[in-house]
Image (cartoon, rainbow, N blue to C red; front, side):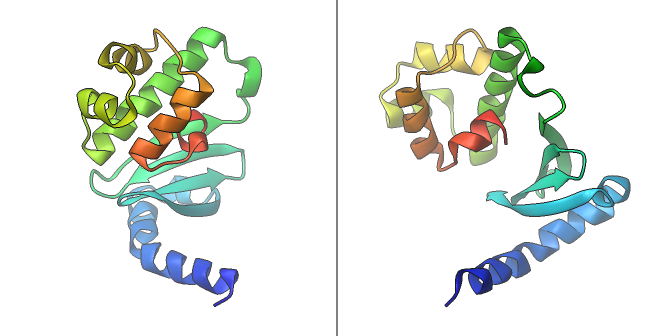
Length: 144
């Protein structure tokens, strides 16, 4: 089966989640140029203006995960805060505690707590461990 055909089937499967988003957020839906599944019962959305959102079907909520107009203009402190929020929300969405993430990655629970509060940013090596444990991409944790 060709890749494009598999992608179409994937979007067909996730169509009801996208339809729910359109129903809940009709104004924002008008600006969506692309979308794709990003996790359990959630989709990532990209607007024409370069913003990216995650729509959580279960809670019917949406949150901004990236705004290319901000790009590297973010201070290091702001970047750390955004990363920590993304990590924290990802843990909540997959139903995993910081302690469980610590056990799955071999990273101390103190460091996981520091990552989730924005007091520290993981090394690339630890980021890869976190990505594997949460079954997500590095981009999802950094940009969404």
